[in-house]
Length: 123
Image 1 (cartoon, rainbow, N blue to C red):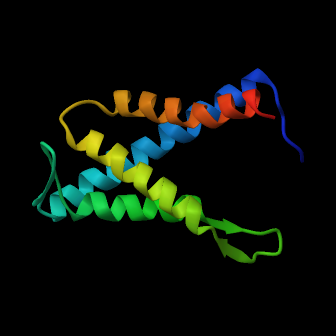
Image 2 (cartoon, rainbow, N blue to C red):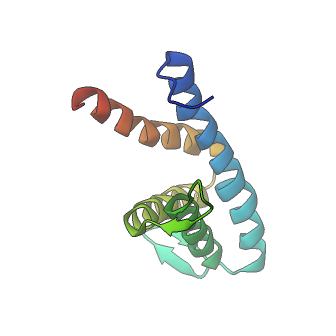
């Protein structure tokens, strides 16, 4: 209860579980369902995508930009929304290519690992 647990077990859990859950929910289920509703009529490079990718990217950014305080006050961090929304769009583009979300999940874990490395180098 309370406080941050700096153990290796906790760090590994925090690096893997959010990535796994977010990829299943956002790029697995949600993007898959929205792709059945919206045509994939946009193209970036060789990847075709539709409004489903735009919607899931916005929701991914909102998920990371919104926070609820102890007093139930809601706050919104625009930088977090923009950064994670763009990251969600990039991950969605990777997902729109044929293949498993396993590779996408590994990529997501690697991206989440970057702040840990920076924090260890520059405390």
